[in-house]
Length: 419
Ligand code: GLA
Image 1 (cartoon, rainbow, N blue to C red):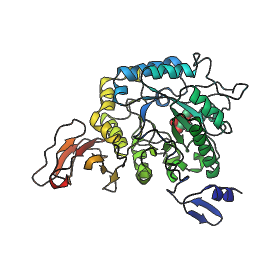
Image 2 (image 1 turned 90 degrees about the vertical axis):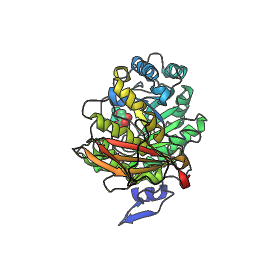
Image 3 (image 1 turned 45 degrees about the vertical axis):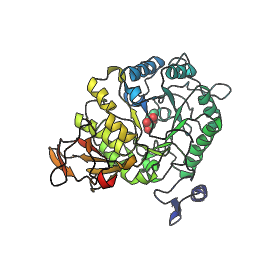
Image 4 (image 1 turned 30 degrees about the horizontal axis):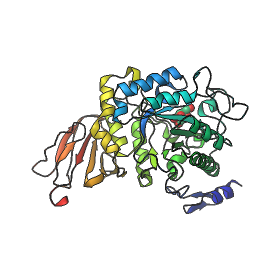
């Protein structure tokens, strides 16, 4: 039964059949729509999400304070505009008419009022929902109820639109990992969002709750016609690397490694989501590793969604998150993620618009290392961190010393006959 449902449900992509089990080929499209939600996210969405720092412990006072800090810190002006209220905002039971409502204890003013608060400050409103029977907090037992949106997609999309929502994070949280069921659920909400006529970013995570068998469906297939952005891995944690394989928490380096195969899927409105940023969260990541975190997310054209507590952010964290040269690489309209020119990913190049290129040199070792690259044009090379012009050596290479865990980042301009 499962085999035939899966085979029927996958419209695009050659099927790989081993014995009686068929699945679409790795990397093939789950749906061949050009773009999931027209009119949103021409460049990777940027914003802030409540989960990494607050988990289930959120209320409207917290979210408003974060929104205020997003503005006062200059992060909003730098492009971080979506404020995403993650899990645990809702009443554990649907209303008598079947609609989702805000938790009266946590969000007594209601979600429409929160949307107004955000919009009045030039921000955009994001909200979390569960794609199956339960949200992840409900599945794990940290929050009561069963308010997943399965079977309620049209109602819930209309509710979100009526609240002024601009971004829906839609999270598959179920031990069921049947691809046909996932496709049905994610496409149903996509179509429900389209039907509202409100251009909401549609951010899906096909990976939660299905990890007992080691599957990470966000990584295996191309969901770009289904969602604006698709999570590739399990949840990020504020560490450089974890030792949990694909079915546990992932470190920054683990996620970067996992992203390499997904680059052909990325284009405007079809982003791969490397998860929220852990910059300024906890104490495990060194300053150099946090720089690499931002630089490599930018090189991969990933959404930049801060996850730190903005109300206690130190100036160095704010300055890092605002770094103009790095954000410009992330937001380049060309939407071409980097490819590695070395097997270990230490050297990456990304094509930018106008014939420019970004080059990253990452030192994943434990000691400072000299690293170099050869610009392929005669135009000026800028250090993307500082904006300074970098001198090219007489041998035509640029050589820098990169601290352990750090990433040197350059932008090359076309020049001479390359222009
Ligand atoms: C999953 C998601 C996280 C977060 C939590 C909320 O684990 O991957 O990003 O949304 O659910 O419960």
